[in-house]
Length: 211
Length: 211
DNA sequence: CAGCGTGGATACCGGTACTATCTTACTACA
DNA sequence: TGTAGTAAGATAGTACCGGTATCCACGCTG
Image (cartoon, rainbow over all chains, first blue to last red; front, side, top):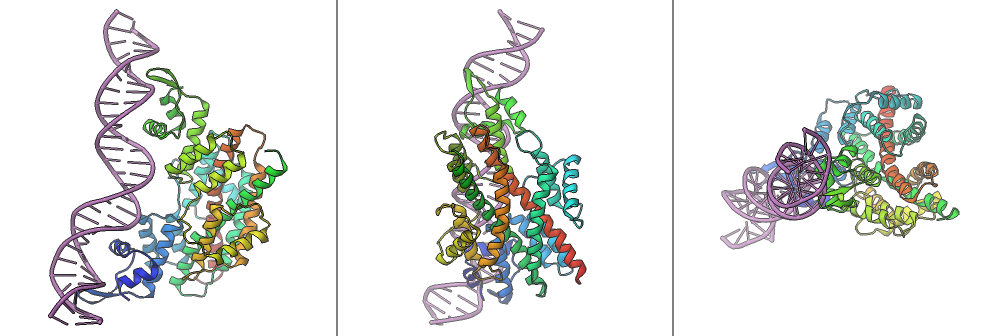
């Protein structure tokens, strides 16, 4: 197919597709003449992944570049690609100065949850530590080991199920696309459900108590 | 305290505080002279809430204005403020054309979960519907009632606990601040834990199977 | 054989979230 | 009482991000 068809099928403006091509987020098509190039299903899938990460996940374009680099590196084992992508699409303020106390809290939680295969350098682990530090700083909120472990146990149930649901018998690129997009969009699904749950439960306690 | 002290105590650049004052995100201090104004603890708390929503929650400044308007409307019941704020800080692509089938799926899930106090107009409900529509469109991912209900049950456990943990005996403004910030930062905490869980569980299945 | 649409390049744009500068004048200290 | 320091308030400017728009020379299609 030609670019215009690619753009149309993914429901993305042509100008945006050209922009992604310029930025090497999307590999160039096969040139079939001086002003002609062909794109295939793999381009379409890649384009859909990119849009999904941008629109649902809010991943900035610069991070998308790192994502595609990891995805395209055939030598990298699937698990390494995933940890790399996880680090790159992680969102939030820079996890600045490491507060050892908060990091210790986090590690205690991970240990209690039985998570012993988490890299020490995991960005998410560091982000969590600075979030804990922020929570325990000025302000009314607290984050003790107990509540965090409660959260972690629920997260364990969820993440375990999500990993189990993966179809590990597909081709590498398909598996990776499934993991990356699934992680982002089901994360969003869960967050929405959590907030809907807040609405329901808060309505309930508000009703049975006074205003 | 004076602005400079306010800025310093919240660890926010003075110029940013002035910007927030201009945008009426932060109420003006009490003028004690032509070039002098006093700020108090309530300003400090408000400023911290704003920064937390911006930095941890990624809430845009325009939405912050709607948040403070709801927060400052003393006549609005706490629950109404919360639903309003929830709608406003909800993130993602605009939930465009409503696909009735996806909405039906979502409502079936809510019903199965026992969530009967969710407004029909809830933005999160609509967002979830369009996410479901997107999942069931082209692409490998599916979102059936069964998986969604599984997610919803976990979200139910989490959101129920979060609502139960609220100290409902504090003053209105403190309660609201606690709810708003808690919703955002614990959401982030959970998301980070979920992703750390992915890393652990994926490492495990990768090890016991081949690469 | 007309003219549409292509690949490729470059320039431009609108929104967001600040940041810098300037003016005027109070105030605290010497 | 002088004066250095800083406050408030207003206006202007900036950096970045994520695209859009335009242009060009030319091959392909009807």
